[in-house]
Amino acid sequence: MVSVPSAGRVQQHISAIASGFLGDWLEHRGNALAVPMTVFADGEPLDLLNPRPAAPGSVLCLSIHGLMELESVWDFPGQPGEHYGTRLAERLGNASALKLRFNSGRPIYRNGQDLAALLERLVSNWPVPVTRLVLLGHSMGGLLIRSACHYGAENDDSWVRLNPDCVYIGSPHDGSWLAVGAHKAAGWLNRVPRDYLKVVGEVIDLRSEGIRNLSRGEVFEPGTAHQPLLAGARHYVISGLLARGEEHPVNALFGDALVHEASARGARQPGWQLTGTANFPGVDHIRLAHHSAVARQLEEWLV
Image (tube, rainbow, N blue to C red; front, side):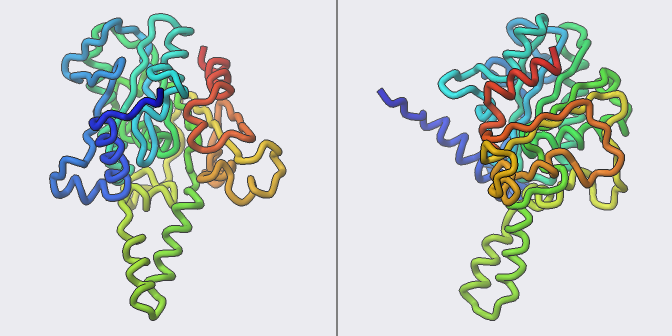
């Protein structure tokens, strides 16, 4: 029997897509489709001032989704509620697997600032002392981690002193070729002297600040000088490729479908020292968030 998504679940997916495309606009107008930043444990939202998960552990594994996604993107196919975080928590012991939901259309730096503040409240109010923090970010989620680390260090937040494990999964640190393409296409169509083409260009150009940031890998407030990776933390990169053969020309053109391998590694970021990198030919952008081979790599690094 084919399962039919509930009306509430469909509404959540519509909200995630709308927030990704127009999230800043929706938030500015107080629209209910603008997704609030929320932490979930076992599918239930947590009160950050008084978090009471069923079995709080001293290690927190927080999974952060990407553009136009929900936290369900992490779940293994056919296994709702099982994801990288739960597998790591089981192997680590005394650990809690958490997920974040956020408005992916907002400027990345604003989400980063809010994530830094959220982590400070979460760690400060957790029922047991937190000894370790593991942050897993898929696509834009990885950029949020970098942003939050910068603002958390700037504010001297206590969670930064835990020296978190930061895992960037298919994150476009140097920008996403698809987002760059949308930016260029909108600019070209807006310059073409045909009204109907200009309309198409204007529609494309309606994309959110989050998408615009993604096109250039921008994670800090405009005017901020280049910032290195958080010192003391461990930084890991996971990338994927569409074709199984690494040298296949489709990989050079499209990477994992949205992000090139070099961008996922931050090849243009000066002075980066990564703790570990792994590339998975034949695993596309979305499947990087819930693939058994990636799960094994994460366990090898983090357990």
